[in-house]
Image (cartoon, rainbow, N blue to C red; front, side, top):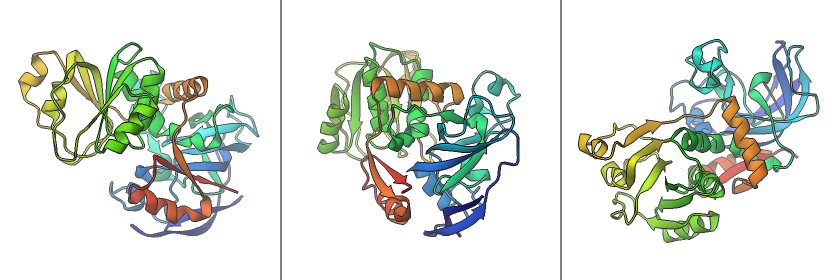
Length: 334
């Protein structure tokens, strides 16, 4: 099938129209007609080759919602015409201990959709059908950011020990942070947000946060009037980690889903005295992605998005680069 996509021809370039062929050549593959695709900062990192693993021409897009138009003979659980979602991960070895325990995202041989192939800024996308999950019809097609940003924060919160009736903190109210607030609050937790402006503090409370503190860039959070069970950081900038650790109660966990190039500097006693932990968390595996989507459909959790036509991809990318989007950008095919 001849496919129309939008591709960066070189590092940092604006996207240009590109035609290429896609075909189902493996029994496990599916071909999906793209209805919508979210824009993630990882797409920009790939366009700019920040991670030194981009190949050009590069078609970004890994928060894909669309319908199956063709499938290989070994594909099970998906039918032609069914709506599916495709996130960052396109494949894994499927035989290692991580894969066999449902943690394909931790597989040493996992592959990203836009690292090894062409992504969802296109009319169609091809992927291993085992990594195309049924996308609930109750969710709007523009909810594609759940497939990357949503599962990233939900998986992190769950693996850090979030259940219900806890005190959960979120650092940063952006594309990731606003989804973390929605999931934590809808599951019955008391949510505290740390953000940079009074306007965002008000927005955090509208999303379900119990309280929001304004912490200007480079400043430290206030002394804690209460303690948190876990604290999720969604920001890629250095923070006063010691001050934030003091917000954690005994056995509390600081979990990071974003980070900068500098190592963390944590005094031993800040962890020892309350048996605190620090952990990192990437995207989620297929099982927790399925749980993320089903929970979102059941509780009415949808990302706050701005929608652009696919042909306006460069305008949308520029809005994301300038941090002008609240909170995620989504491209729609006509």
